[in-house]
Amino acid sequence: MAAESKPVRPDAAGPDGPEAGAESGTGARPGALDPEGRRYFSVLFVVHLVLMLTLVGVAIAIVSIGDSATALTFAGGGFIAYVSAMTLYARRDERQEVTQHLLAFLAAFLVVALVGGASWWFLAARPEDVSGDARLEGDTIGADATVRLVVDADPGDNDALRLTFTARDSVAGATPCLRMGKLRFLGGDIEAMAPVDLEATLTTTLALADPGPEVAVDLQLVGSADCRVELTLEKAEYRR
Image (cartoon, rainbow, N blue to C red; front, side, top):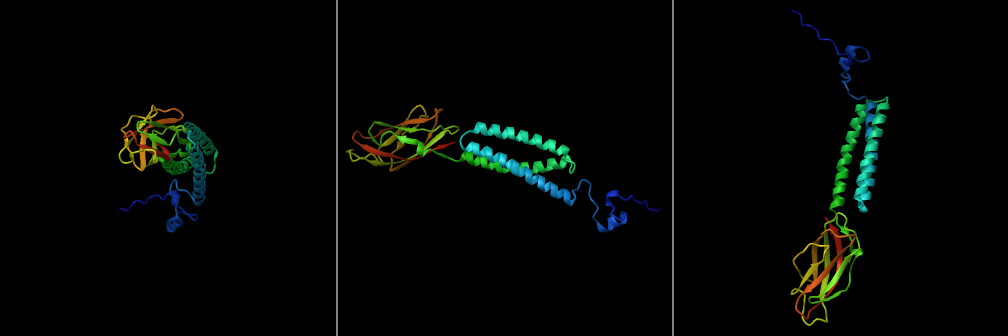
């Protein structure tokens, strides 16, 4: 019994008929893009990538100046407007189907999401240097006396203040304070904590307790009655 021949697929035929298509092996696959279509897809991808990176870049710039709410509003509103405009253009484009526009958009969106997410995380984790906004209202402290530290900068979403001091025994004191005394941090803008050992270089992190537009902390020297210490604020940072 003779084997039944299979019909030749129309898309396998070359310019000279089914035989030419079979010999050359260049039959187009269903849904495959021709060279012009691939070039157009690449252009769409680059356009989507550049526009979305610009949108994310502006949002990150707004975050860097401390206005997260405005950044989120701008990014969300801009993204919705961009998707709406992209969908309208794709429906009117006669060169490619809407599906190709969607694929180019999704490919660019994936790249932007990875880059934007990494940038956002980096900015969120980066300490905010507020040394220029911090000041000590006095530089010499006696035993059980206090000196106030004020940071004239809104902590925003940060929840900790990291401080670095240098300390030295004052010539006015009769006994040394370093390595024998302690420094206590007090105030309504920070959470309660144990005193910190007083050393030549002292670094400590204070947990913030819902402060206002500035942070005020009282530093109290705990030591022998006749010791004096000179403090210098070297660095102040807000951290998450």
